[in-house]
Image 1 (tube, rainbow, N blue to C red):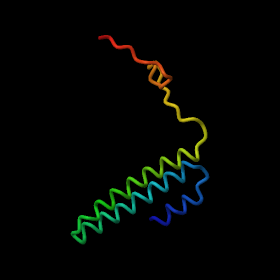
Image 2: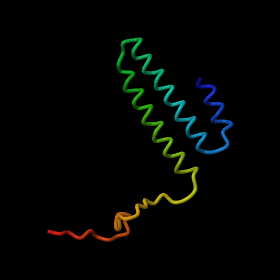
Image 3: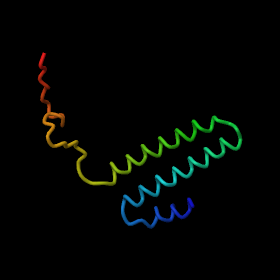
Image 4: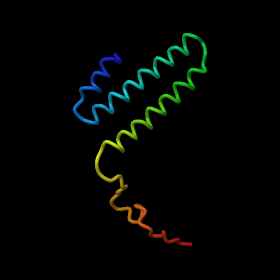
Length: 93
């Protein structure tokens, strides 16, 4: 199954296709690591799987940041001053 998803990562025309396939590969590998931990009764592999999942998540965020154009400003309508434009929040004390 990992080879089919890898093929999708290579063929995928968009960045989102590649990102989803890389996330699927990291999920499948972490599931294999967890199955190895269960079969061997060595639960130290759980930490390895957890670190692998976190690295996959950070790698996915990095891919989105590098490969997608545009700015990454937080814009929430109706919450003035939340965007970090330098305004100090007034205290009602």
